[in-house]
Image (cartoon, rainbow, N blue to C red; front, side, top):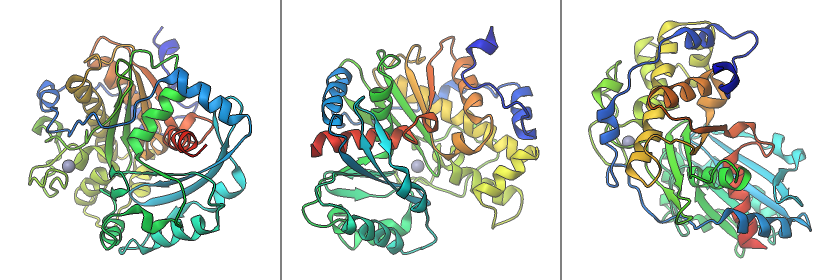
Amino acid sequence: MEEILNPFPPEKSPCEGEQMFLQRKPLPYVPTQIDAFTTESALIRPSGRIIHPAEMKDKLREIGESKPPVAVFEVGGTNCWFRPGQINEEGLFVPTDELCEQNAFRLNDPTGKSYADFIGGISSELDPAIPIAFNAAGRHDGHKYIPTNSPGFRQYLQQHEFDLRCLFPEGTTVVSLNDAEAGVTGLVAEHPDLTENGAILLIQGTGLGVAVWDPISGRVIPTEGGHPRLDPNLNPHEQTLQHCSVHDDQRTCLEWVGSGKGVESLARRLYDNPTLTGPDIGRLFGVGYETAVDLYDNAARIGAHAALGIAHATSLPGNLDGVAVGLHGSLFDKIPGYPWKTDQYLTSYTDARPQVVLSGNVPSGNLSNSGAAYLAALEGY
Ligand SMILES: [Zn+2]
């Protein structure tokens, strides 16, 4: 029975880390962490766009009849991507693959200028009639964008008063939105059948982000779900060095343990190796190093608490029963068994069964890109 329900069956030959995940008992639930999620601590703000899925689908299908181009820039903590594509007759975003691969970009620049050059260089070559989605982790307010995960890019934009328009040629239609908001929009657009009771998108990549879609109001609700204070019971390796930049608080927040950068900073201390990177820790996990498995296991537990905490602090059912949960980001994509472990936590902590969707499994590449592309198409055409 359990096997039929499992949305993420293990690989045929699971690596050591995944096998350890499969054999381990789930780490305990921490109800006091859920109580720490409030409108203030998670900056829950009813400021997102209003989406009516059926209406949006109809408009996208109509737009898609002429297969118009849309371009997406996606900015993460350590990467920046350009994905050109088009909306098809079914109203779905389809990347046009020629440019997609060659433009994958890895940042190794403390000033953030390479991000700006990359985005500016490509967008100046584009037909200005093509609407652009600017999909990035951090805070967006109209034309203002403040990156939270990439200090160099933040510094660069600060010189331009955080005005995004400094990156694009004048007159271009640019829809700027947070990666979690974009992802939950993609989830609602592509899975209307699963999202009738609401949707939540959990990001665990460089950072930890959460956004909600409320089916009653139709509104997307951005949050800072990675930044409530971390309960000491979810901090077994005693992360104390990092403080929360969102709340300017000396105490550790969920993100500093439950994200890629949290895992990285802990692994560097625990393995006494200041140069370890995410891929290195992924390899240690793959061959079954206990500490690496512990760190990802606890990160998955923290992600589940973030989703349940945000549900508790918003109008979603507190146990996420029947709610669509999108899982997005490098931890889900790169760590074998991680989506399964997250699903295990979500279901073992409540007696409910959310509808779990892996963002990286959709044809458009991921839900965050497709959601951003839909909003750009709706605004630009
Ligand atoms: Zn924080």
